Amino acid sequence: MKVYIDSQDCTDVIGVGNAPDILSAARRHIAKTGRVMTEIKLDDISMDEEAFSGVSGGLVVQFTSRSAHDLVLESLDEAMKYIPRLTKGLEEIALHFEKNEFSAGEGKLADGAEGLDWLLQVFQKSSTLLATDDDKGLDDLKNAIADSISSLGKYHAEKNYFQMAICIRGKLISEIEKLSIHIQKLRSLVSSIHQ
Image (spheres, rainbow, N blue to C red):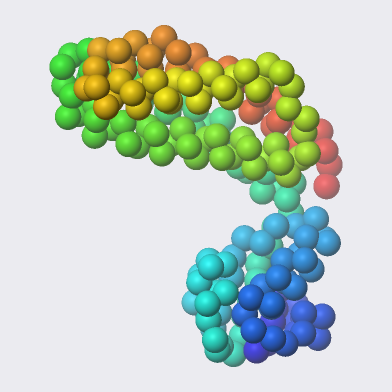
């Protein structure tokens, strides 16, 4: 199998072997350059790492990477743009619950949970890539968000929609707004690092 990394033939560097070995070697090679793997194409078919690890054939694999700096910067920019949409959506969910429009609120709740999960993942992964130290305030905020999510789950199981609305408005939205301050700090940190 021919191996390309960012359009450069790396077959000699990576060597030959099974797909998991090639993937590991490509990952190490990319990491040495301060980059992050963003795409895998086997014979011009895009796939994720798990799918690639399971293949047993193929002629050409192309790994594409980006600088970790650019990837983190882009992700944090997306997160900053997304926060107002997330808080507006959560506000709408709370309003639906207060108006006894439970099915409409529940329909949007899954999207809100997915959006919050994405936001937290972006923050966590960016913090990890930047090797920033967590401070006590941030740990407290993470715990508060986890507690709010747990409370929402409990209220949802009890079908206590009014308490869900109170929790969303009284806690979760303000916690997300506090998280946005930490995301902005990370964004400023990344901007100050020139690559």
